[in-house]
Image (cartoon, rainbow, N blue to C red; front, side):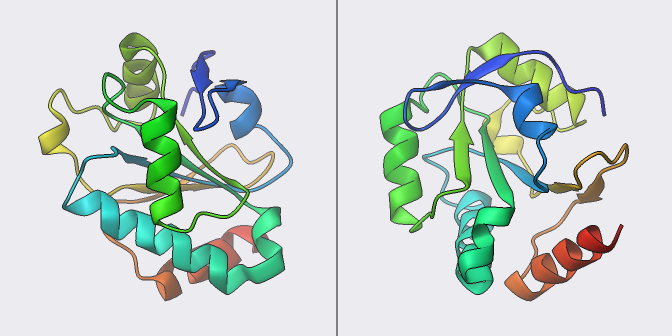
Length: 155
């Protein structure tokens, strides 16, 4: 994937360079969600929450990134409340930005949907310095996500 050089905004209203997040020294697990979703997104987010709990102190060693597919409505306040609802721990960021930048990010990961109602479960995993990503186009249990994460660490 070609990561676009865009600046996004996290749940604290802080501007972040997306490439720096992706190319950090931590593994990244990424999904695409929106704050008012009542179908797929809660399931993905419960998975991230349980994953962090299962890792315990090790949760600091991986960066969970949720990208908003509804940047018109997902403000930092909406995203912060969303993360609080799922008991997100430090290391899980919910990012939004202007619509054009979000579209660039979605297209970069072959995850673009023109209508948020058409979104699908997608989880992407990336090891630091790796060229390739692991792409999973289905809902994952916490155990399955943990297994994929451990495989990622072995590469």
